[in-house]
Image 1 (cartoon, one colour):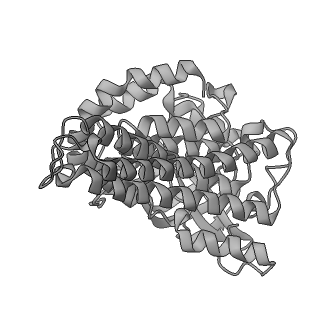
Image 2 (tube, helix red, strand yellow; image 1 turned 60 degrees about the vertical axis):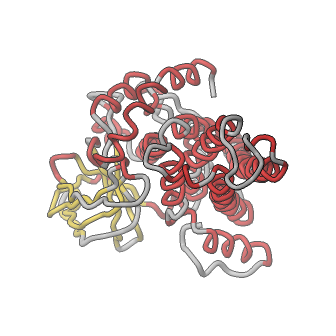
Length: 382
């Protein structure tokens, strides 16, 4: 990540941390927070350059989301998801991209790839209906990506704000400010140029497209899986910093230690958490770096590598959560007080780690099958 972008993100810290409690209570980011992030260009990291975007590689995508999440997990999550959706829209036909970004490079896109329906073909496009849950950032989105199954497989549909309604139902323990509500489409017309078949992308059609920018040649499924790990890396580092900063002034109850930092047992807990976070970063960035290399060379990684990258993402998320469990215990019960940022970090990371794309058992089973040469019967998205 460039030092300029890091500086820009760092300058937003007072605003993001100051607004975090209210955003958590309101279950959505304020318009002021979103506008400040847009003005800084943080949500344009993965968009095409011709629309004012950064065309950043996967490693940079993770680093940006991590840096923001260290200040506020929900904003970091939305940074990753809005940039991720930009990456997805960059694979639609250019006419669709013009529809989305033609009027503003700061257009925000929400959505989900879990299929709903029904959908029927009509002259010039499709009529789409359905409901899609867990659409992060939908309150501020001008467009949504909705998925449905056609005769030739799953497809993604781009739907403008006037064609969907939002159902306010995101009442969750963590990641509350992401506003990941359901959106509903009722018999909307979607022209052909706003429809993208997912089958060819899953099979690697984008990865070997020499005419595309390298940023858009990373393998689709492991890219999407890794993109949701970035925020958790930042949450873990934020928790570690908070616990270490408090260790010099906080004692350990019912012991002779006036300072946690003097306790060898505490030191061991800090080391355990820090190395778990190192493990998370090593796995996540190993996968991202390797995929960026594949993209630069226009190579679609084989099944075993794609499975390993998914496993890397799952191990990273699991390692962050293990580190947080240790840190919450080491810090003590005061970390669960409403006034402590630790409890929100813990809640946010706990919910984020349960994202469908990160379930360890699923990703590790896919990897294990690839390792022993067994057929993947777990998911068509591999």
